[in-house]
Length: 302
Ligand SMILES: C[S@@+](CC[C@H](N)C(=O)[O-])C[C@H]1O[C@@H](n2cnc3c(N)ncnc32)[C@H](O)[C@@H]1O
Image (cartoon, rainbow, N blue to C red; front, side, top):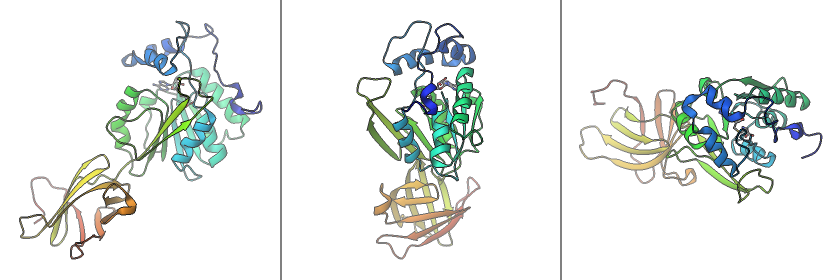
């Protein structure tokens, strides 16, 4: 990292007693995270002084990789949940032309982030706020980045899954439990401040379309069972008890495809507002589908 880097002034060694220790400020602000300080210690793989928990930054190479994995660009509005010294939001603005917000509960880090954004010349596109990430409305953001703890990710998961389909979520080192990532990659990170193996794993999730339920066409009904991106689809013809076609597939932001890999898709259905259109059917050419969501409960398509 060059001396002119806006991150050169990051806070690896916060003064031990100049302000409430990080662990204490967390515990005071959010009692239900009482295990957080211990887990941050575990993340650090170190035993710091009892009254100080290290602030852990995402190394710059990993920051770049996270933003590339999310495909961040000028049209994006990104939020980093627990933004530390602001490097992810600042890099998104400076290198990728995005707008961004960092929310962080440690006031000194918010001040440092603002200073870093000014030094990087992106203060007009990189905003920082002292706020508990659990109180932030996530809906306005197209990309969400996180370097948090496993149980914090799990608490966030229902809110992330409910976001607009197509929203990208990238997490450094921590996953979202049984919500499988759409992509993961592991990097060698020799300058990683924590851990013995000097590797970082990044995960990307794209919020899938919500397809579960019945879809009614003129002569074909389609039932979708959905677990995150995994879908199981049954097509039923009017007047026939046996399913006409059954397949497992994957929900995307704007529809679904058959099988795990988009490239191998035999069935592609696209969601256009409330209409679902099956545009390609492998081996069952006679079955096309165009239908709308069955909103009422307790009734059938036909
Ligand atoms: C591991 S650091 C990651 C910093 C930065 N995102 C990065 O990747 O370099 C986690 C950050 O989350 C902040 N944090 C923890 N709990 C938070 C909460 N409830 N609301 C906002 N920030 C929080 C911590 O103060 C810390 O700066």
